[in-house]
Amino acid sequence: MKNYDAIVLGAGAAGLMCAAVAGQRGKRVLVIDHAEKAGKKILISGGGRCNFTNTGTAPDRFLSANPHFARSALARYTPADFLGLVERHGIAWHEKTLGQLFCDGSARQIVAMLLDECDKGAVDFAFGRPVGAVDHADGRFRIGDAHAPALVIATGGPSIPKMGASGFAYDLARHFGLKVVEPRPALVPLTLGGDDPFRALAGVATGVVARAGKAAFRGAMLFTHRGLSGPAVLQVSSYWRHGEPIVVDLLPGRDEGWLRDAKRATPRASVGKLLAGAVPQRLGEALTGALGLSGELANLPDAKLAAAERALAEWRFLPSGSEGFAKAEVTVGGISTAELSSQTMEAKKVPGLYVVGEAVDVTGWLGGYNFQWAWASGWAAAQAL
Image 1 (cartoon, rainbow, N blue to C red):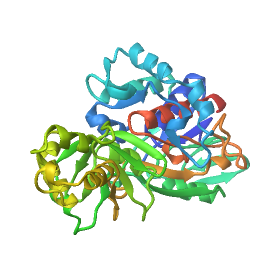
Image 2: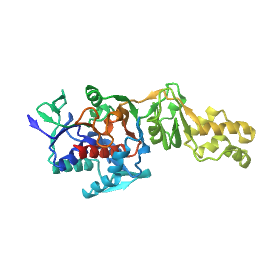
Image 3: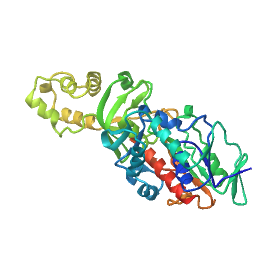
Image 4: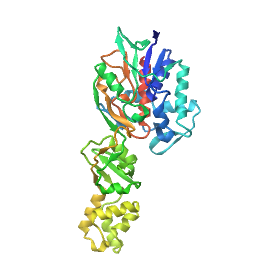
């Protein structure tokens, strides 16, 4: 029987961070993962360059049944803290739009950095080892021939199952009597019904403001063979509920009355010609047809043009669903924050049991926020081990 101070289940972002920090604090740590190597989701993130954090990180950019839960961990381990680690390892990086930080080179550098930090803490690894039964007795957790007074669940959520993701964390949480907020796909493309004419626009992208409920995001929207994708749609997908529409401003920034003003300035022009200068041609043609606005502007009543303006500013798509966990970048929902300490990530009614990263009911926006939650929650738990 091998004795440890902590066993970490999952060699992803949160698990590696937790193990490295705890190990360097003098704790004997074992990381167990069913995969053959560490950080598989890290490696595919950000197009292989890993959007490892976001300088705009704030609690209001995360979804949770308790919107205040993430505040403590995020305040104690910040994007600047992680960036300092990246720079100490000599990893070149750059900032894209909206505070997103990426490696200049490869996501492999982030995995190598985390493994190096684990080596500094003398962390043990057991790869290619599916976790079977987890026994808990006399204040100790036992998995196979290893036991410890602390167990960290860092196995993520069910998004991207082809990478080995599953609902294992939820099953284990329920085994210990912890509640789970219903998980659903997030940062995921949305589908449109088979008869929706906009599916014929696959490959067309345009800048929009997309809304679902009270959430609104500006960015690109991409029409696909199955429906809608692109950053703006991925963002609102986390807030979207089945049966609800998403509302899209197809021409953001236009002043009220722009079509009527165009009628007075260029009465011989058509709505189609105006749209062709503002959106991709195929989309402009589809919108003109859907609005029923053929012919010259001079021949169209102002009331009809005003109605067209409203329609273009509040175009309603009714998704038939999403592309599910297979295409979801992350999961909304997870192990209930009501069960956990926001300071330590420890389960309130199971001393020694911790939950970090995506397994927790905390989900960030697109753009590096979920990695920052992984680093911050892993760091918080490591301070308490």
